[in-house]
Structure formats: structure tokens, C-alpha cells
Amino acid sequence: MKHYSIVNPGHSVDPDYATRPWYGYLSVNETNDSNNPLAQEYSTGFQGGLAGNEPNALAKANGDQAATAVETTNKTIDVSALTTELFSEQDGQLQATLPVPVYGVYIPYVEKTATRTINVTMPDGKTTTVEQTATLAKQVDLGKDAHPAWTTGEWSSYEVPIIPGYTASQSNVAKETVTGTTEDQTVNITYTANPQTSTVVYQSEDGTSVHTTTVNGHTGQTVKVSNEVPVGWHVVNGTVPSEITFGPNGTPQTVVTIAHSHATVTPDAPKTTGDKLPDNPDKNYPTGVSHDDLNKTITGTIKVTMPDGQIKTVVKAAHLTRTADVDEVTGEVTYSDWTTGYWSDYTAPSVPGYTANYPYIAGQLVTGETEDQTIEITYTANDGTQTIVYQDEDGSEIGKQVISGKTDEKVKVTPDVPDGYVLKGEVPSEVTIKPDDTPITVTVEHGKSHVTPDKPVNKGDLIPDTKDKHYPEGLTHNDLNKTVTREITITDPTGKKTTTTQTVTFTRGATVDEVTNEVTYDDWSENGKHTFDKVDVPNVPGYTASGEVPSKKVSKQFGTIAKTTIPEKPIDSRTVDNHVSAKTTTKRELPQTGTTANTGIWTGLVSIITSLGLLGANKKRKKN
Image (cartoon, rainbow, N blue to C red):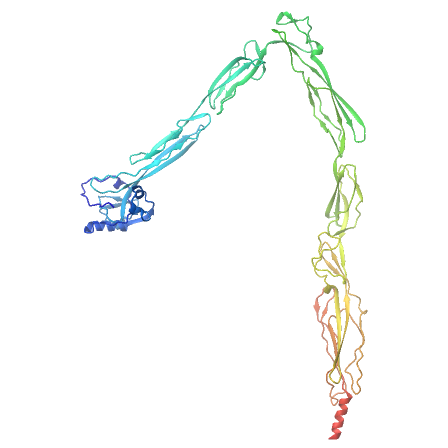
């Protein structure tokens, strides 16, 4: 690391130090002038006043291993940590006012930027600007008359765009090394239209060149062209352009075919070999210019076969003429094209539901090469449809079925009733396809599916005879079947219990609307047709049963269990001889809805007092 010492104020200092901000770059060495208090003071000032974190171009450019051994950092010097006698602040940057020695970890340096601006003005006047910059650095050396060199940079080469038909003022801008003395530069590039040449070539019909006109100009330029047909010649093919515009890739030559002047013979004034040529009285007209050479008739016939077999014939004729052109020098006869005749257009008769193979014969230009022609028109039945609209009783459309076929064709019909609906009206077994599809209306109604209690279904099961309709809930076995139970328990005097269980079952069907999924239940099976049989209560000598179990007609209102019980113990005869008690509890399912409710169910409680018990008691009293 360089060691800087204090210099006298009279020594000259590089002006770049005072006119540019100072930056510092990191070095791991410290001052080696530990005995110099002033050096230590400034060394400490520099170390404490550096801040920031930027790439250090100068240290890298100088190959300072001490600086690059750690993360190289540029740091702007904070003037608050330095003496104001030596530095001042301008726009947040440190400015040197006097030479200072540099000791310590950070070495100050200054930067400058050189810019090269390239302006490329295209042929259309639009300008594109490219800016190239190079940033240079110089280490601050406050030694006597020290002027360290700036680092160098580079402006890269620039390739100028190539525009077809134009030449740039320069093809590229060369790469350039930027030094401390390099000034900002501006390079302006423009384009110049290239010169171009085109020709108009007049040639005879055999391709021999007769005359050539040269036309000069530049890319993008439009140049007027003079008509230079040679005297005695006339144009027979091609056109002499009035102007030529030169494109970026050149302009092809224009070829115009010319021929000798001729005497013209018209079809209404034919000539014979005895007639003289108008411009060459010494020569007679050649053969080939008579009436029949210059006139002819061509016929077109249209034969129309209607769908019912009738035939109609239409004849069209075209009279053509041509002129003869006689080379008055060579005597050669050249014919013009035949005049054109015209067979007018023809529209085949319109037959609803049918298409003619030639529905329209466009008018045809008839030329000398056209032969007599015959065109036959026939008819083919069109594809057609017959729509069947399915609607409910309110007239609302539920769905429709389209039957396809050919006009006047009879087509069998397989009904396609909307899912969930059934026919109320009638679908025809077959339809005849007409030119116009007039819908046939068929009335449908909601389909009904009846579910019986012996064949219940689950929610989501497919309804028969439908494509995608499914049963709702409320149609299971428990929804359509209800069982009523009576349970009789008899307790004999010994405490033994005998239980008899009686059951009857009620059933109902349900109807499902296949469109709305609404469920309508049938009535439960009729009341009075289910009976609990009478249960005989055993006769025990000396005892009286607390009740009896008669037969009972069961109503659908009963839903669960009814119990009749004979008590386990006989009733004390000293208190009562016979005792009958009853209580009612039940649970039933309401019809139609399946809702649970509580209602009374009879329950008989029968108590039997055994005669044996009473006798035993009497004997004991007698013995005592």
C-alpha cells in the first residue's frame, strides 16, 4: 500500500480531486506512520467516515490484492467524521479543499464517465439513439505534483442496420478505448438511396428487340416514362408505363410487343382478292378476308327434365365476327380474336324440396373457340326434416324430435317422447318429408310410476322405461309397510309367565310423478280386515284372572306393541277379591306422511288370586 505524507499547501494538487466526489476503496493495511499524530488523526478520520457499498472499479483495475482479498467496496466519505479544514461537502459528496495525507484502511479515488451517442436516422426519417458509456477511476494521490493516470474503459463496436436499397453513411462504429482524455462523442449515421436503372423494351412478336428506353432513378423514387414506340409500329401486347417507382430490390424491365401497321378488314365489309390494299395500291387483298372468314354463329342448348318427367328445351345463339389485319408489307393476314357473343344466364325452374344439378347457368361469354354445347338439367330431392313437437296440456314445449329424409320420401317414425313423459296424443307411424318443415304437435303428460309394497325401491334407483329419471325418497319397505303388534303376558299363581305375540301388517302403494318426483301414497289397506284373535286365559281353580283377552279388530292407527299382563303375585284376598287395572301407551306411524305420534293403545292387566293361597291362610288361622 502506498504511504502518503503531508505536503506543503503550496504544492500543486490534481484539480480532479477538488471537482469530483471522493470515494474510498478497501485495503487491509494500516498506516505505517504510527509516530505521526497527524497521520493517525487523518487515518482514523478516513476509516470512520467511509460509508456505502458499491463495486470498486479502481482497486480491481490496479490489481490491488489487498483490496480484492476481501469483499471490495467503494465507500462515499462522510464529512462529519473529518476535519472541515481539509474537506467540504457538496451535494452529499466530499470535496477536497487542501491536500491531505492518506493513511489507514481506505484509499480515496474519483470517477468520471465518458459517453458516445450514436444517432441512426432511418430512410423514413425516424431516429434511433444508442448510448455507450465508460466509467473511469483515478486514485487520489496528494503527493507533490502527483497526477495519477485514469483507468481505461471501452466503447464497444456498433453494427449499423442494413436497409435494402440504401447505403448507410458508415457500416459500423468501431470499438474504441476510452482514456482520461477521451471526450464525449456523438456519431450521426444517415442513409442514402442507391441509384437504380430499369428499361422498357419494345420487341417484335418473335421476340426480337426493336428499341429500348432506359429509365434511371434512385430507391423510392418515381420517374416519368416517355412513350417511344417506333414509327410505323404499333403496340399489340403490353402497355408502355407512364411512370416507374424504384423499389429497394430493383425494378424488372417492362416488355412491350409491337408489330407492323396493317390494313383492317371488318366483317360487315369483307374483301375479295380483286380489291386493292388501301395503303399499297400495287397489292391486292389476299385470300381469307371474305364474309365466311369473318362471321359465324354458335348455339347453346339447355334441356330441362322436371321432377315429374316433363322436358323443356331452351336454345341460345351467339353471332360472332372478327376482323382481318393485313400486313401491307408482307401481305400476311392476321385475324383479330373473334368478337364475343353471350349466352344469357339461365335460372332453372325452382321446385320446392328439390335441387337442380345446375340451378343457375351463368351467362357465358362465347368466343371463337367455343363449340356448340348442350346442357341437361335434372333435379335431386333435398334433405329435409319433419319436426314433432311434444308439448304439455298447457301448450308448453317439452321437447321435440326431428325426422330426416328426402323431399316426398315416406319415413317411419319411432316416437322419442321426452324422458319422464308419456303420450297423451298420437305420434304418426310415418311422415312424408315436405319442402317446408311444419311441426306436428303431440300432447304428452307426466309419466306415473306405481310402486307396490312388495317391491319397494330406494332413492336414486332408475325409474323403469325412463332414460335418466330416478326414484325420490319415501318409497322404501318401511314407507309402504307397517306392522301392529299385540303382546299378551299371563302370569300364573306360581309366577310363571306365558307370553303370546300377535301381529297384523298394513300396506300401501305409492305413485311417483316421473317429471316432478312428487310422491302420492295410496290408502293403507282397509280397516277392519285385520283382527287380533281372542286369547283364552287359563282357568286356575281358586283364582280369578284380572281380565280377559278378547279378539280385536286392528285399525291402521295402531303402530307398535300392546301388552296384556296377568300379575306375578295374587292379590291379598283380605283386601280385594278381584283386581283389574289398565294403562295405555303406544307409538304409531301416521298414514301418508310417515310422521310419528303417540296415541292410546289398550293394555289389559289381569290379576288372578289363587284359591290355594286363600285356603292356606284359613288353615293357619284355624291351627293357631
